[in-house]
Image 1 (cartoon, one colour):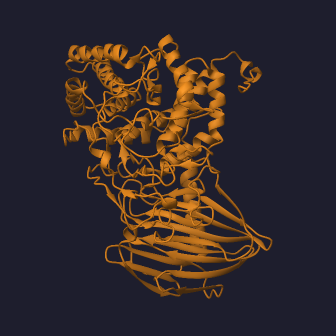
Image 2 (tube, one colour):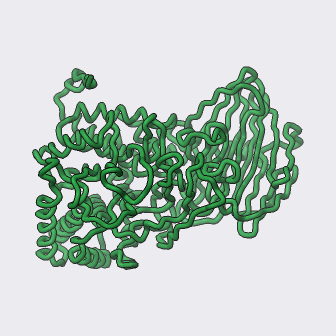
Image 3 (cartoon, one colour):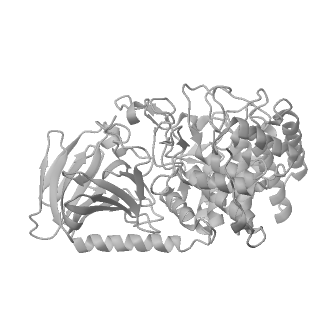
Length: 624
């Protein structure tokens, strides 16, 4: 399994319609085109031998590798340091169209020698449609065309006239190999364009630099719109850029992650496709983006959510909303396993599509209504037709909240009366009442209030475990669930209420290990899947937010600072952290970065309330 880079050893580049993962060894290990949820072009991340890759690296010698972003941009620089010289690969995707869906994507790979000299080895080995679509290769002196039945890719050399510094050839699989020898100050490279079968043409060095400058300008201008001025500016801006990279600009939809089937446990079966937009993630994004001042992006997500509400897609008895959709809003997410791929480091099955799309998860209604309510208060008003659809949705919630469901964690072990689902139904009805009262909208307010109050009483009576002295995962267990960390955040219970303080104390004992937080204990609450999992990064950041609200600010800050050490070298997080600190699951994960932003803003708010100078004098001593 040495052919696989660690999940954390990757950076992300993109053009707001798809994205690519670039490893520290110079390999593009994952790239789907033309959209995030399209079949892969390069998929070595999930099968090093048969997935395909585009790799550029020093041809020989002992190499030290470093990787970084050009500050405040999504332009990735991979540096190779040897005794003979220093070389760089500069990767980026030009952002051409932000509102129109197009079928052609472009990845620029600029190869530079900074000091001395260096010979780079180049390997272009696409595998269209997850390796299921054969292709023919046509090579010329200016590049190559890879032509399949449904997919095409054109690779143009970045070069100057009469160049004699590179040579290329085709192997028996149709892959293109090459070598290029550069000396200090020289730059060459590749322009990779999917969705087109030529023409092949030389891309001049000056044109590549122009595209670089335009891309840097785009990202610097976007980051410049942030209003965040707190203590963790660089960290939050990297998270914001990462979230922007996972946004499908034509609709405003945010994918949960740009990858599929990365395992929650190496060798395990918890390998899911995250290249879709969850109603839950989109809802949380509205808060985080507004917290950073990105009102346009928050409004776009709000419109995407409202479009889903308007559609009222009642399928399979799952309610008026599906839990996830494709980036264009379509709802066909049929799940299949790619039996011909071995999976990341042998972690099979490799799943594409997502069978959880048809589950009943009641919490999404609260998250959707809460985000609509917050957006409305920030000037993204609900129109008349939108209000009618909201009323329909809340009428459905009123009639259907008191039933078992699969829950936020998408368990496949049967439906339960999950406390978190009830909590968020309470939120949905509460925000509906508030919108109706504050905006003077017609609505069956008393009916909504009656059901809202019934949910509150049920949670207090059945969601509370007298044995554990804590709120529990569902009504038939005493297992705890870190999803409930949101109870005070949504206003259900004051963060200093004794019942909540006792719940936090119980979570500390059962779910928290050295500041990292498990979502729940699968052994105590079987979820229908084999194997274990790591701690959930989003839960750790939610724990920080909850601690801060409960007045445990010093503990919250230490937990936050510890969690920052688990990011990769670029400040990116996957879904989970393993026992040895290894990043696991799909990468990077939007939910984690959203929770990071919320935790930092909550910490800033609590720290700013302290008397001036107190923050500098306080010292947190870790427990012995």
